[in-house]
Image (cartoon, rainbow, N blue to C red; front, top):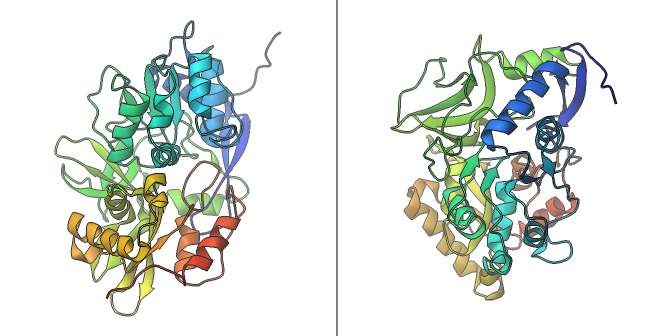
Length: 409
């Protein structure tokens, strides 16, 4: 077989990604630069050993992680890759761990939402299988809360596997911020440092770099090989979305902070920042507080309009199986969770309402669609639901809004 030769800027594929407030965007990637970055990052971030590794990227192959790290990156490195289609509990809740045991998987790359689902089901399930073949774990898709990071390391990685918590986007084409295994001393929940050659900064409203210990907007300061060449058929939207906020810098749309060591922590989408009585709070911060409660498996938080405080916090929470089965007084648990957030952050962060729900609306990539939850919280007509794995979840949550939750006593 002789492969075809193409110009470096030959369009390779279009990837449609959900817009936070609008219709999906057709992200264009081209051949040369994209393949260069997909191959290089896969090699170094995952410390690939092609002769012996069996790698499993659990993403939907139609999502950018599936393209970059199931198809192009692994094949360019000659790596054996597991392909799996279906929900995590198809054939039983130990399905993933049976696959790892059977095929001696060495590297697992998955999303925090999957990890939190397994936390909800209980650590006894992975403990029933031999996961000793694993040598490296990865996380992708959204910031991973420290509790999920620690659970992943202990119960899946046996406290021996490094975790690479990676930040990148459909638009970037490949990994941009990540620890390097064997090089970086990691911190639970931190993305750590840019991949070598990637220019990253955290800036304030005026586009000026913030110091250590401060937060701001994540920007990319230099071109990189796999950067998108545009939004298909909409150059104006491309310019407005990514290049208009800070001239000369790519605006990622994510908040970030540098800790005192200069390491990077991702704070989620900047449109997920709430203004409560004049105090700016990140939805990620409140979600982390909720998930730190032993009864909570997963949480999504939105800011809903409030006549008194400008915005008020509405939280949507799924419980761990053990807590769910206990048939405890839900109203008492809701009050306990509200107080837990107040104690963890501040009384200002106490949610106005907490909805206990069996599931949350997610895209195929595992991202929670907070835009739709805001629609529900504000009783608006629902926006685009075409990228959801299960559109019925939103209607179910809408029905729960009036049945339980809690305003201030």
